Amino acid sequence: MIPATFDYLRPGSLLDALTALASGDGTKVLAGGHSLLPMMRFRLAQPPRLVDVAGLAELQGIKEHRRGARIGAGTTYRDLLQSEFLRDRFPILAECAEHIGDRQVRNRGTIGGGLAHADPASDMPAVMLALDATFNLRSKRGRRSVQAREFFLGPFSTALAQDELLIDIVLPPLPKGAGAAYVSQEQAASGYPLAGAAVVVARTRRTMSYASAAFAGVGDMPRLIRSTDLLLGTKAEPETVDKVVTAALEGIEVTGDIHAPVEYRRHLATVMLRRALETALERAR
Amino acid sequence: MSILDYHAFREEQEAARKAGRYLGVGVVSYIEICGLGPSQVAGAVGFGGGLYDSAIVRVYPTGTVRVYIGARPHGQGEETTFAQIVAEEFGCPVENIEIVAGDTESTPQGWGTYGSRTTATSGVAVKVAAQRVKEKAKKIAAHLMEANEEDLEWKDGKFNVRGSPDQAKSFADVALMANVGWNMPPGVEPGLEATAFFDPSNFVYPFGSHVCTVEVEVETGEVRILRYIAVDDCGPHINPMIVQGQIHGGVIQGLGEGLQEVCVYDDEGQLLTGTMMDYAVPKAAQMPRIETDHTVTPSPVNPLGVKGCGEAGTIGSAACLVNAVCDALAPLGIRHIDKPVTPARVWAAIQAAKQ
Image 1 (tube, rainbow over the protein chains, first blue to last red):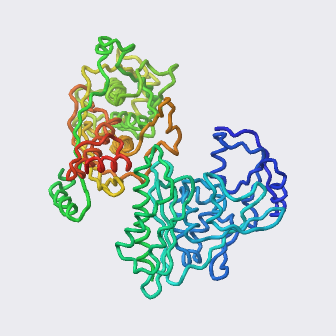
Image 2 (image 1 turned 120 degrees about the vertical axis):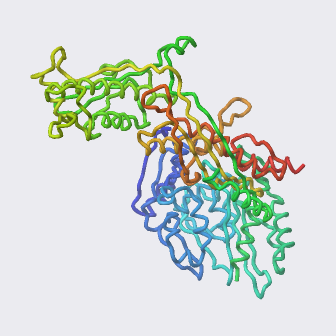
Image 3 (image 1 turned 180 degrees about the vertical axis):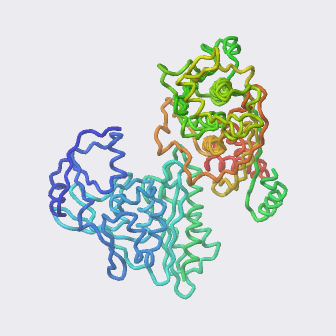
């Protein structure tokens, strides 16, 4: 439970942090540390150097942006939960963040840290897929934007290059009158979801005009659910919802483990999706 | 069953079933063998030691008391409970009593804290030693007041001479005189202390009944504990709060085992639940409020009448929970599920029953 030897760097500016990351020596970024440090203690990760970005002002802040939102990667879950603006515009974020860890974890853990860590069992990546978020990345080489739906590549694997830092998260505005929901069932020991589902839906004159959904914790990474397209143009009758739920796992490989064998997790994922869909539909005006 | 209002619950259960909800009630009764135990039995069964326990009660000139005990509490609260036993005997504040345990250089031979035995053995030795001290104190008090020992009565924390209410000696008065030795009764040694070794003539047998109600979500296999009622009989309670705490702790341990704690090994014998991320120790938010009540049936084998309560809560609680889950799922034809009743296991049992 003692990590291997490592150097620790606490840069005073974003530029210094990017310079340190550019050295290419396996340096890892430390934010809240609630995922990385346990891995280091188990020696599953042995980075030679940590760059602590927790104090960087450039990674802070929750702002309105093009009628959506821009969230600094260093924003803690606590700050997400306390933001009146986000609770008003994107209440699904609070609904999800409430499930993350415990109070201590939410006080330190950051949204950017969790997303960059890309634990396949974590909750927030699925919400990002459902909200169609865009992630702004920076390195010494320059800036680029990557859609959340292109960002997650596998377990603990993302589009981030070794020298890149996740700067902020941009959420496009939800369609008018949209309803969203995140529903999960937690594993009793870790609190990570055995399966979770994030859903965003909207109607135009009683007809479904927008539907987006993703699974958390069902396999090697968060998965967009394609079958929600079946809702578009319908009135979301129970039969249509049934069809969406039945087809939701098509093309998605579900993983089994000691807490949820494959058969159970497949079933649970569909239950979570149905509940999230029903709740989101109720919330959509 | 009356705390639950069993018949009302059955009606609620019936109504819930019609609405597609699955409620269940589990009942468990247990009897425990503890307070170990007669040393003769220890010898007969080949246990490598004795099973008596011991105490030295030493009274200082100021009336403060130090009690050296043979057992070694580790969180059961006996430092408090035993001080209460002595305080009650001597009519002095509980703060005046210090319990010393675990220092084998100063404590008498004893056999430890386990098996819900300590109050019923070491605690009784404390009581007996304190009684011996008090007998000697009574002799000294009688001598100091020039009265017959038989004419003394212990009232309001003092030795009083019957029929002459202005004549009285407190325990602290006697403690001082015994320790200075200026005016001792003939043939009585100065000082005020006693040692007792208590070897019980039999085990003690606490018992109780627990009732648990649950709701099972058949869609996900999740079990939610609605109520947990524990009625136990460990004899007289010396410290009701500590007894309740012991029951709470025991019940939670059992519920954790029944609900979610499990060691999983892979085919090579590698433990897969080696961290708190995978091994589900119960958390406060996962546990119900525990409703406790008790009856008092004193044990005949020791003068305090006490029995053990350290393990009482654990014995029945896992089974009580699983019984409740099986009762909830009875309409599906389910009569047995191996503990712990994790969502995956409950769901699998429901699927198996459907076929």
